[in-house]
Structures are given as C-alpha cells and as structure tokens.
Length: 291
Image (cartoon, rainbow, N blue to C red; front, side, top):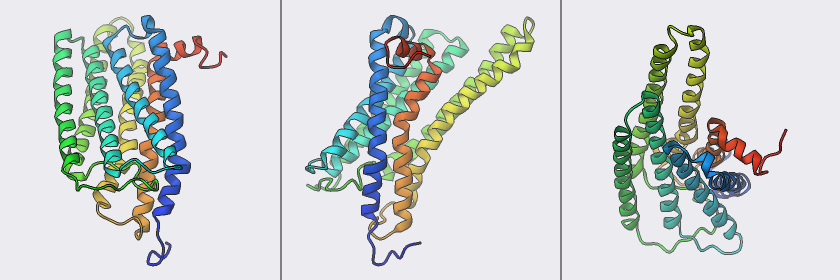
C-alpha cells in the first residue's frame, strides 16, 4: 500500500472519474436516448401496457442523469461552476427516482403475474409514489440545511457524491431488500400460476419456464445489489474520511463510482433484454444493425 503520509490521493480519484466514469455516463446517455426516441416513435407497439410506461419513465431518468452528468463533467475542463452541494442533491434525487421507479416496476410485474385487478395495482403504485415523494422532500430539506458554501467542482473528486448517510442509507438498504423480496415473490407466484395453468396439460414445460422466470428475477434483483452496494459501503465505512490522505478510502470511492456509473448502461441493456419489442423497434428504426 502506498505511503499515505506524504501523498494526496484525491487527484487519483479525480482522474479515474474523468477517464473511466465520464465516458460511461456518455455511453449511457446515448443508449438511453436511442431507447427513448425509439419508444416514442414506435409508441403504438412499445407503449401498450402500463408496465411499458414505467419502463419509459425509468429510461428517461437514466437519460437525464447520464446526460447532465456528462455535461457537468466535461464543462469542468474549461470552467468550474457546478457547486458541490448542487451536484450532490442532483445525484441523490436521480438515485431516489431510479429506486422508486424500479420499485414500481417490481410491483407492477408482480400484479401482472398475480392477475390482480387494475385497482389493486394502482393503489400499490400510488403508495410507492407517495413514499418516494416524502423521501425526495427529505433530500431537499437536507440540502437546504447543508452548510452554506460557494465551493465548486474544480476537480472531479466529489463528482458522484450523494447525500450523507443519515438521510438515505436506511432508506436505500430497506428498499434494496424490499426490491429483492418482491422479485422473489414474483418468481414464486409465477411458479404457482404455471402449475395451475400447465400442471395437467403440459407439465413438461414447467421446468424450462421456471428456469427462465428465475433467471429474469435473479438478474433484475442482482443488478440492484451489485451496482449500489459499493456506494453504501463507502458511505458507511468512509464517511468523514479525507480522500487526500486515505488510500483505502480513495480506492473504495473509485470502485463505488464505477458501479454507480455502470448502472446507466446496465439498466437500459436490461430494458432491451426483457422488453424485446423495444429491441425490435431499435432494429427497425436503424439504431441497430440487422443481422
């Protein structure tokens, strides 16, 4: 491990954010933008269900987050004018929206599998929306109570920072567990529906379909865990530590920033994978090469 008594590690984090994370955000903005354009142009085919509109909202949030993050990062090369506090609350609100829409997506998928009434599904979405509205208010309140500062992002060190642990960590941890639990419930309900509908007619199809359902639930749940757990680890372990002097904290910050950035690519790819009609629309409109 390098000698951390005479060396500042903050420039290392800044360079990593610029050379690795910013290009990822740029690619994510491009990918999400293509999906948005395709979905809107082919809306008669891609926006048939309420689930499709939720996916569209999720893609839009990723597009805004990735686009603004890219612009914000490259603008710092010529002039630093984005405040640290403003950047922090922007990132925090985007993550809250992403988690909220992800939760709405989980709930809607469960209700579709369970064949619930539209009223039951709507009530669930209203409850989720109200909960995340309250958390957004908490973030804004925390932002206005932050110490007044005119500090700007002269370097991309705290570029991807989020609000302090006392505001969001309990919320995020509970939400991740709830998201994974809903995916598990969706899988179990899907198996029950399969057995009821195919048990006496085509029982040989149940194992293959069960594996397919399990794979989709596993991938969606693990994508949330893998991309956001590193950030929670940094917030819990390294809160208040100085990146200038702590090599371990700097390394953990770079890892967290990488996985946080990679989600702007991973989620749109999962959208295309699990919503094949959007993938086909991309091919028809020329965004993807025909094979």
